[in-house]
Image (tube, rainbow, N blue to C red; front, top):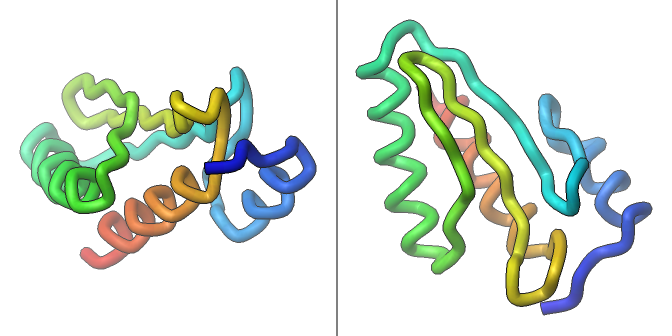
Length: 95
């Protein structure tokens, strides 16, 4: 998979509210009502990530979820990252 240029990344980020590009990855964060809600969404995202065979770097503290996407094999951000980011947005916004 081809690594996207910074301009290509920034163009695609215009369609992803709350996502930023830094440190060779796209990033976002979410705040939920409580830990149970955060963990429930993480589980749903995990199933989608597994289906796409593309796994996020993420961390969770209580009701906070931080997500970072980068395609390690390509050495940066690819279409694969945007496909998963859009799926994550769909999951989070479905509730």
